[in-house]
Image 1 (cartoon, rainbow, N blue to C red):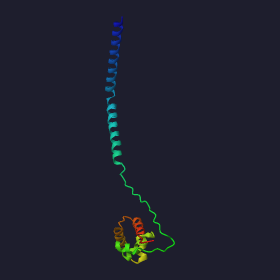
Image 2: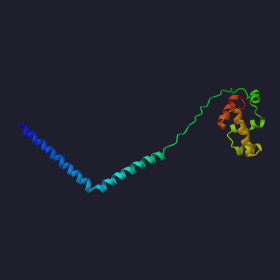
Image 3: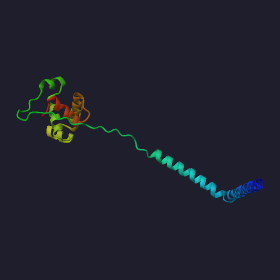
Image 4: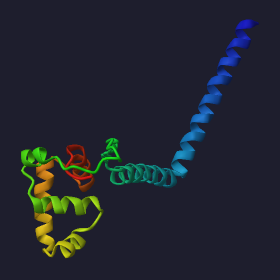
Length: 152
């Protein structure tokens, strides 16, 4: 009796699997155009997403932060320029005038108008100052000049 039930159960399972296979084949054959279209759409969607992410990737940016260092200068005494340091750095009087104007926050055009020189001459003096003070920006040059005692 157990063998008969087991045999009928096995035959029923094989018959159900065969019917599902026939149903699957019928589904694939009758809807093959839609299936192939879906596969192509899926491939193009994946390619589009990948290409979009690749092309719109943000570039790495380097952020430089300057940390201001407070230089204590006694307010009771007047400012005395460090002449030895000025000579050591090789900074001329005209470059000191440019440096003081930079510290005041003036633009190249404003400095040129105040000192009666051209804007290109201001740029040349500023570039030489940056080299002498080992600075890359105006604020850095002013900070280093204050540390060296060249400007108040």
